[in-house]
Length: 163
Image (tube, rainbow, N blue to C red; front, side):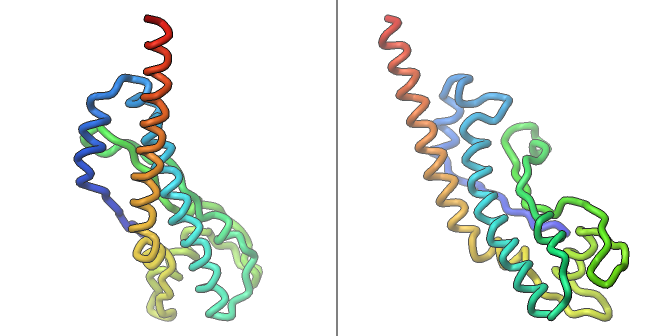
């Protein structure tokens, strides 16, 4: 189950990031990582809400384990080696469901999202990306701009007081 969401464009921010010092463009992610995490949490919260609604729509008994397993986590860097990646995913966890059968969170989430031959799909992740995608981009851009401005002010004050 893979729903990919790429933000391409934002040339002004990319040019700014390329011209800034290591405090901003660090291997630990710096402000980019923090801004992406904030945007991913927004989509994650919507996905959790949608998943809970999908479970309730079916009238299924639920232990709540699958909903609690929806997380936003930092992913590996893109293939070109530059940039940050955050994922909204289901953490793999085996559990005994409400009917006493052993199952996993990923299998349950996958069956709900895509359905099967016996069960129609009740998507929960794709609608979260569709409904909160633009808001997540706006949050990321706003937060990243704010964090960059803060670091630039701190560096200016540091350099101004040192010189």
